Amino acid sequence: MLTLSKKTWIFVGVITLIRSVISFYLPLHPDECYYWLLSRHLALSYFDHPPLVAYLIRLTTIFSDQQFFVRLTAIVLSVLLSFLIYRLTLFLFNSADIASGSVIILNLYPLTASGIIITPDTPAFFFFALAVYLFARIVFGQSPPKNHHWIYLGISLGLGLLSKYTTILFFAGMFIFLGLDRRAIARISVRGILLALSLALVIFSPVIIWNWQNGWISFAYQWRHGTSGTGHWLNLLTFWAGQVGAGGIFLFLIGIVASIIFLFSKNKPKQFLVAQSLPIFIFFSIVSYKKSAEVNWPSPAFFTLAIITAVFLLEKNQPPKKLLFWFSNGFCALLVLIIYWHSVLGIIPLAKINPTWVLMDPTNRCYGWSDFTKELSRIANGAPIISTEHQSAASILYHSRQKLTLYCSSNNFVFWQKNLLKSLPLPGRVITYEYFTDVSAGNLKPEMFDRVNKKWELLSWRNNQIIRRYNIYECWNFRGF
Image 1 (cartoon, rainbow, N blue to C red):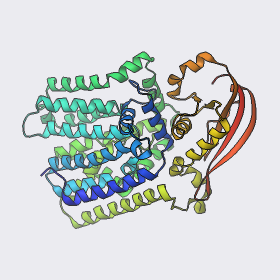
Image 2 (cartoon, one colour; image 1 turned 135 degrees about the horizontal axis):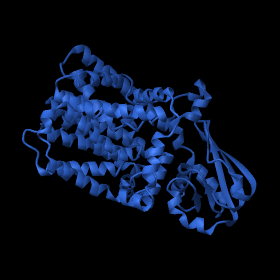
Image 3 (cartoon, rainbow, N blue to C red; image 1 turned 180 degrees about the horizontal axis):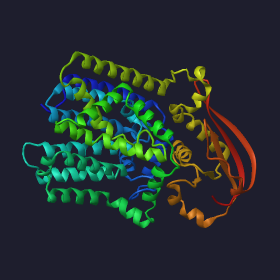
Image 4 (tube, one colour; image 1 turned 120 degrees about the vertical axis):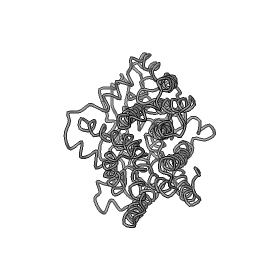
């Protein structure tokens, strides 16, 4: 039976309901506002990311721009991921208990539990996982793979690449597994590989065309973004600390230990899963030495890591391991519920522990932008707004529904506002701003103006705590960025 069991459906239904409620009430993160803004400017691709996340947001916000609809894709894909991981686990190990366990683990990782936030990782994670499932059907299926298997694989990989460039790491896992299982090579046809690659390339071609038209700037930017830096072992430590936290501490550590054990086992399905997980962590470990990798960068690896962990803890029905399974998932469930409640209600008393932690709280980055936009609009009174930071600029445009005139020098704004550069200097009154949390952003650059006059100071509050401070300046004659 390849459908989810009743109890598993109930679990997925409950956690989806919770995510939907959180998604409805939690204001958009500035990054989400930026992806929403991309969806208002549809293009073949963009400076900092491939376009699929923008296309999906445009699709789900046809009737409303409320944050729930901006994030709707994330909620839908999380349900489909649960179905997908259940089917893959059941196909490889023929155990409904292990399959249900993998669903539980995947949904309780703090990384995936925070997946209500819509980013390019959202569709990239899903289509990477779908490609893993389809490739498993090719190498472990009872009958030889047909053309449609390769077609589906090519479509999935193409959509994954159209979401995020790191989908290319799927091929590393594929070739590593083929090196571990020579018998699987017999099921791989050159015609099938070429068919899948051709379809993936066709689907990814808008990104290639856009980069060709713009001097390959997006590829160059992502390469610099991921590899720039002098290198330090502390970056590596920071990366792995982030992964341990994203994986719920106990579940992640168990999964890594199990991955190493499975790598040297003779069980090919286990090696298959490791090949699509461990190399990704190793790759980003190498990258993070130069520049500390973001927590979400290796996120596709958590798909097969969840199955590895479930197999390791539940395969032999050993009471100590089953106890460890429920303890680890119970710990994650508590952790995730605290994160959910805090994101909406601010229940963690960070100010009593360390006031600086309030400014560092990532959930606070979602708050304060609506009130700031209203006050900025009042002060501007029709004057253009100048920004040097794309996230805050996107937040202002989202909360004003693009009713304010705003110019920005960062990321994709450069491509949208090429005509501005031709008309500089911009005479008359303009407004600019800077803001401070635990770091400063969008800092004032007086050299961009002939004169800088009045300054207003605004404070954003949440639960009687200051979470952000803004300085707003009235300037004259904008010279350019």
